[in-house]
Image (cartoon, rainbow over all chains, first blue to last red; front, side, top):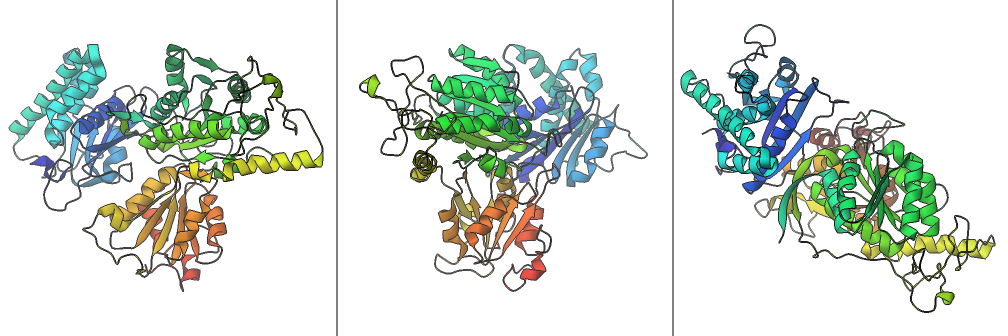
Length: 205
Length: 409
């Protein structure tokens, strides 16, 4: 089970800390996606820290990175050291962060924006999903971040979908419906790929 | 009922200020503090308060002094460049004893530095930034939760001591989000400035009460008084004689020191207390060999705490000041001889380490883990210094302390 050594797992004395990077372009909403993930962790009674990487002036179109640490125990160091999960929506976002990955990390990339082969291609276990394209096709471009989050949570099992949906409703209020729709779309997208792709899991199990 | 929030550090500062009764903000936005101004501009007018975006930080600080003397709990937020501009009127606030709070979300310098990456290099500026002999109180949150609680404490101290109080946050703490247990409204202990009573014609605005702090009237009320930046007597009237000057300088310093017990105490945690009884150590009295006393504040303290989590086998005690100024010297001094060396971790080229050395006074070697490139200091960097393999200051390598340094080699 993907999440068994993560914050919700209870096996042995394994450290509970789970670190994730959500990276893409400024404007794709990945900082907000990280906040929703952290808020959902708090709803589950876990500890969470969310931060964004300072790149000088982070503007629309430039590299953006949201970090989330989730743990059963109090979190000391607030930043990512070895990411257990990387979600990258652009090639630059993937290449910039591949060296921060823990062994057997969960890697999710946008299949249209991160090369599938050749230099810069993810090695091994990446899940390749049409996150950005799907958002555009469904008229949910402003909810690209929630599609990405749905895929991340479905593939990592780090938190319950119900917690995320409660966090989305609390954060977006009247605008929650399209965001919930996008989140569920992302989770289904990941689930379908997982079912169709066989053992290409790589979710750290 | 207590509620859980997932706040950003800057958001928690603003909520702490509001909870403490702050209703006047004057400031000039600067990253990484701008969220405080943004939120203040929405929250304070809704509460009947005032938000003013000033032309610069010099004027911002002047507005705080005026608002404070008119009776408001006043505050501003800034970062290094703005904190520099505020120094002149911070001195005015100290001299006229105007309670107010200045939040400095520290970033890299000097000048505009690495806009807007983190640093902790305003340690000495907070102590000595404005000229002349003066007291300073600076609180240093290491979590979002403390951004709330220490901001409340800063207002309480400002009111009780009649002086500006600083909150030194930094870009890392200010911009990260984590859980805050928000206390129910009305449950917090809120202190108010001492106010005069009795015949207004008898009011002496600078005659101290028993704790060294004079009662403060409000401009516009029946108690008419004069406030001046120059040396003054109990009536607030300029006086240049040596006796008056000596007494005022002494009282300004003493009002902080004699109220020492009001200052938030340091957190002292060792590996055993951090990880629980499953990690037994020799009890008190037994001094494990190679013990290291690790001193860190703010975001550096998060990295220092991770060292304890990562290395439960090693005897390390974390001494984390919540009050940076005045430095908790008695509390640190009491721990020094239980350890074989002292390590200070901070994100600057070596400021707090000077204070630690003063307190250690040669009883143990002092090493430093320092970083000043705009990146967060890592647990690994601090661990290298804890082990005695490195010392960030030139000429004081771990090798030169091999007699009493760590046992990491």
